[in-house]
Image (cartoon, rainbow, N blue to C red):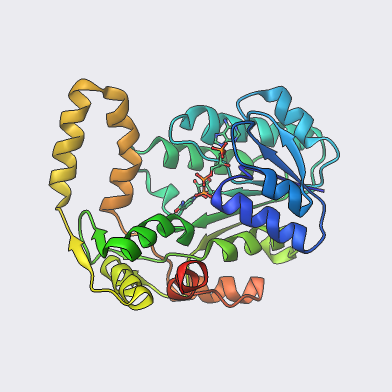
Length: 291
Ligand SMILES: NC(=O)c1ccc[n+]([C@@H]2O[C@H](COP(=O)([O-])OP(=O)(O)OC[C@H]3O[C@@H](n4cnc5c(N)ncnc54)[C@H](OP(=O)(O)O)[C@@H]3O)[C@@H](O)[C@H]2O)c1
């Protein structure tokens, strides 16, 4: 039995669906407020709870062999990105779980002080590495699913908002490929006790993204490209009236101002170990939103 936490998120959902398609038993940890009927319909066992409640995690781990942890919550990085994972790891150890897969983020080891989520991910990585558990840590760059709302808006309006440097590099990766890699991590010996950067097959620059949308939807792009200092100014002003919001925008600031891409060698290594041909962003967008 797999336990998937964050099962109603983009990645968690894809993992649960792929496990159900392979008829592998899976327990999906979901919140009562979330939409989980489709997962239940596909055959997943539903466990309702909150990952900030240790007793819910204890209950979820009973009878489980493998854990894939995908949750994240920008409103509660301490409780969800950090503490719930520490609790999951402790309880996994107590229950002799065979393998723990943790979804981290590319660049988590670069010491971005402005982002509580990046810091939480790194601390969880370190805790897992020293836990004695079998583990795999995956560090994806941007998930293609997170671009779908932007693609849908582009499809309707042609508008693409690009804040900051249009030449920054990124390796957007198919969310379904990350899901498959997460599942296979528990079965592939070469993935044990390893950290993998996970990106798509090509290094894109950010302006490639609206060019791809333009091709897929056959629309001329209207690009709005404010410089980063405008974002900083706005964030600073908002911070004067709401310090909490200033903090929350820290992760976005990190994402907008840095490059997140995998090298060709890293991608080759990933494709070799997992025996996978990674999907391009264009193919992913066509599959989900193309006509
Ligand atoms: N998106 C990206 O581009 C990207 C890039 C690199 C790494 N990652 C990492 O990849 C992972 C998956 O990303 P994603 O985009 O699929 O995430 P997502 O769609 O934002 O999903 C987050 C999940 O966490 C759940 N969650 C939040 N707070 C919870 C709580 N207190 N108790 C139980 N569940 C809770 C959410 O449940 P609800 O449905 O109830 O809200 C949801 O299922 C995350 O760890 C993220 O940091 C993402």
